[in-house]
Image 1: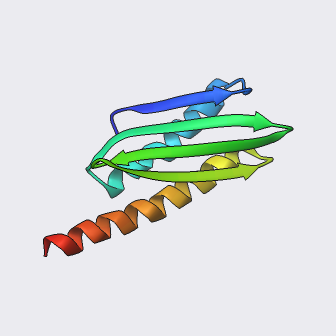
Image 2 (image 1 turned 30 degrees about the horizontal axis):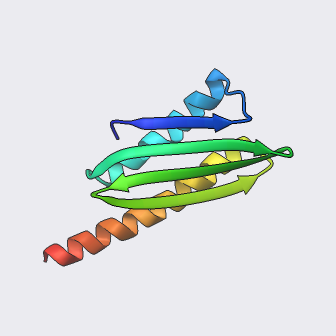
Length: 98
């Protein structure tokens, strides 16, 4: 994943938060060699964090969204959801090539 774009709305990111996002979401690279772009948008609404993760893979977009009171839980849930979608997508590609 060459480009990871992090955008925040109503959230002041600390270095720990940015490092946590990088650490968790960089691991997604191992599931696919076809990732072109990754974008994460984090916003806070009334004490709750809402995060959206967009992943461009071979001209197809995968999207995951999560809402919770805990920032770190939101990032973990995003990672889990996008991993599942990416594995499914890569499985479809491998089946087509056979």
